[in-house]
Amino acid sequence: MFGATLFPHNIGLGAARDPCLVRRIARATAEQVRVTGQDWAFAPTLAVVRDDRWGRTYEGFSEDPAITRAYAAAYVAGLQNAGEDDGEHEGENEDRSVRRLRGVLATRSTSSATAAPPRAGTRA
Image 1 (cartoon, rainbow, N blue to C red):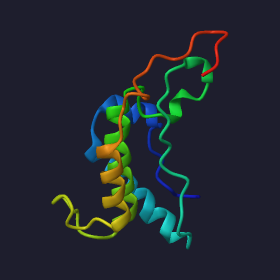
Image 2 (image 1 turned 45 degrees about the horizontal axis):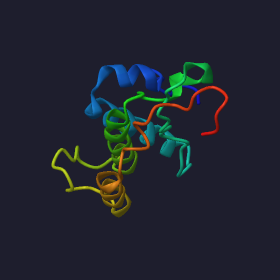
Image 3 (image 1 turned 45 degrees about the vertical axis):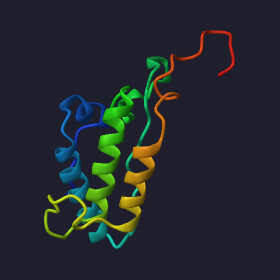
């Protein structure tokens, strides 16, 4: 889209370790998408990249599931709250789906996300 703001790739945002920045970026993205008349976006990418051979590692925020989880909540909240007050008070402006996502992320076990990748020649 001509004139749209371009932000760093997710891998660069992950290095910043700043979920508030990610939320602000998502709000700006949502506002710019809404100007086009669309009501959806292909975001965020929530890949937990553990193997650089994939070739698209820049799409993931981090290989650390905790960072990816924090960024997921911040990004979704930013996309859904675009145009509202800054919502710095947790839960104040959250959409029902954001609250549900927080609940799922809070109860989900990270044991599979922290497991070592399979060895070469074995099935995952």
